[in-house]
Image 1 (cartoon, one colour):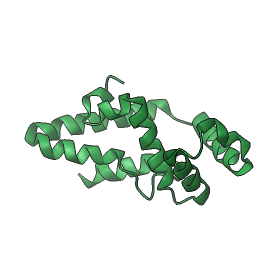
Image 2 (tube, helix red, strand yellow):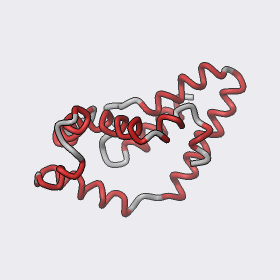
Image 3 (cartoon, helix red, strand yellow):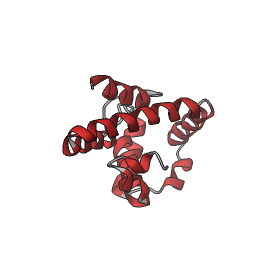
Image 4 (cartoon, helix red, strand yellow):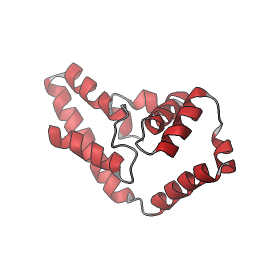
Length: 130
């Protein structure tokens, strides 16, 4: 969290309501129709997170997410985060406003953010654009 606190979207991630809203928006922008439906219902308040377990199709999405967590590479994530923070701080020295705006885009839903590993791919693609 100390690394993330140095990025322009730290306050948004630290706030529980903002963080949930971000997750729901990303889910609502998913290319997977079930994930998109779940995200919309959560975002609109038509469903609570705990209600997801009652619907078999929704439960499958949750179970898939849990399986993905089992193979989550924390070390690689930390290395990528180190790189993002270093790039941001370097770019911020040149133009603070442009750097802040550029790195706030990490929070925007993207069409590729919903697939397995796509969030990481999207982050890498954004870094590669620089």
